[in-house]
Amino acid sequence: MRKTPEPQLDRELKALPPDQRWYEWLRRIEAVLFASATPVSREALARVVGQGVSVELLIDDLSAELESRSFQVAHVKDGWFLRTRSAYASAIRDAQSAGHQVMDLNAFDVAVLAAIAYHQPITREGLKDIFGKDISRDLIGRLHDRGLIGNGPRAPRRGAPYTFVTTDQFLLAFDLETLQDLPDRERLEDAGLARG
Amino acid sequence: MYAPDRESLTDQNRIPFLPSWVTSARAEAPEYVSFLSGAALSHLHHAISLDEVPMNLVRDRLALRAAEVTVAFAGRHETAAELRDAVHFLEPGDLPGPAGEIYLSWQRAVRRPVQANALHKGLGSVSSQLIAQSLAPKGRAPVEHAVSVLEECVSDDSIPVVAALILADAALARSLGWARILPVFALGLTTADLRKRDQSLRLACHQALQVAIIEILRHISECTRGVRNLAAVVPKLRAKGAAGAVEVFLTQDAAAASALPLPDRAARRLCDRLTSLGVLRELSGRDSFRLYGV
Figure 1 (spheres, rainbow over the protein chains, first blue to last red):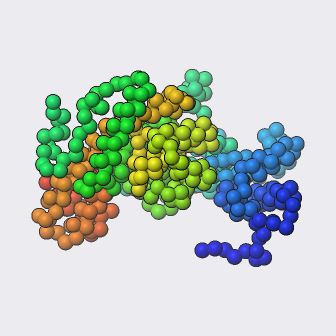
Figure 2 (cartoon, rainbow over the protein chains, first blue to last red):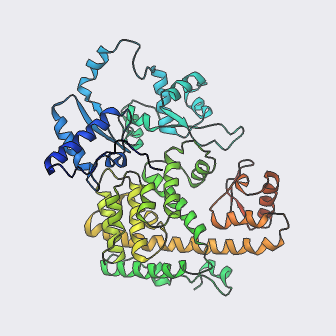
Figure 3 (tube, each protein chain N blue to C red):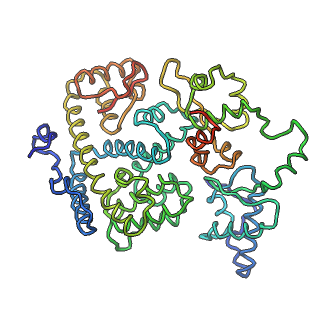
């Protein structure tokens, strides 16, 4: 199944001299990343540049070009996306009207999310064991709505309850490449930031 | 000197055992280590080409073992039983979770042919260039080639350890002319080994092969014996469709009764019957959501 783009995208740009061709490919990568709200995979990027051209080299050049800008190319498991530099976080926050924050999670929501991240796949029952109280469906719903968690495999016990697992969106939101980048549990315990 | 397994495989086509000078040797000198791994590999090569060895089942079981080991590499604590649960109770559209994901990668890796495009779909973050390069031994000795692929992958932070090990196994399989991957390196290497480079990594890989192949040969003889016993009772089963259902257990490490091509009740009864005949095992230890395998 091939989509037929019209007019046909000229990938190879044979008519241009090599340096201009490279420049054009660079702009295309930039445009694709800018236009996308989610990370763009290597395969997707490779489709807008010449056959066999290294997407990594183009990304490297783009990163170098963006060095003086307020945003940068960030790499996640499945691809790349554009992200504002953390130095401008407070400026961005202040500019956004209160109550309009993207995540809008309270401290307990975040605690539950962290428990899911560390203990996934985990059921509501499992979360209840950790927090000593029922976790409301509302809270789980909020995490679902923001795309931070998804349904995992059913737990093999009475009623076959769903388990919860974190999503790629979760990694993105917390600036993690993989779950292994979560703060080490043992170190958190030693620092007195978490109990075992 | 008789290994305990030997008795039960005394019929005509038993799987030959590794000679004890391979299984009991602990070598440090590079020449001797590579000599032993070569002897073990050659033996394995012969064993997997025997007609009666149920290679699909063996590979499926090794995928689970490799997943068990590599899940621990990722700092997680899931047991083989939990990994089975994560995959067997997954429904379409559900996410497998981090441990389930690792198991699924191994399952995909052992089920697909050792070809660049088949591997590429399962190893999302690895460039097709590196995959193609891994599958082109260019006349190098099989283990040398696999080690150099492994070294390149583990030196690159963007490649997950599981993908690195799958690629090294793929490189080995390709240079030995195997049609599918057999997880070898995951079964013998430790996380400390994966931090080694050059000569010490090569040495660790040769030692890993020796350790892993001893284990793999054990799985091969267990699976072969299990399948032979199960196949032997099939003619006694009168339930309609029983042969088709048994086929599932001849190729898969585990399956729930509900996954068999039979009505629910008939499937459960068949599993109970096979378990009581001693040719099928219940693997979960639960009263419900049971999983069976040979």
